[in-house]
Length: 66
Image (cartoon, rainbow, N blue to C red; front, side, top):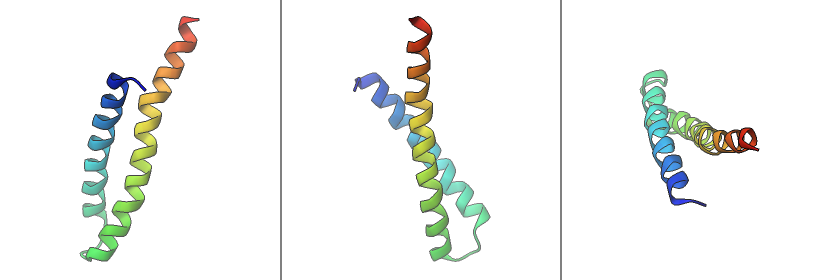
């Protein structure tokens, strides 16, 4: 794994995680347990999205060069 690609993945996942927690705080009722549940579900989705953005783009660009 290249350092540049991993740093892009890390920055993308941190940005999406921040957005996920913000959305969970806005959408959930004022209950800490529900906020944690919403946040966990959205953080899993954010991690998968960050992986798809980072490594999915890289695979597509390698296929175009060949």
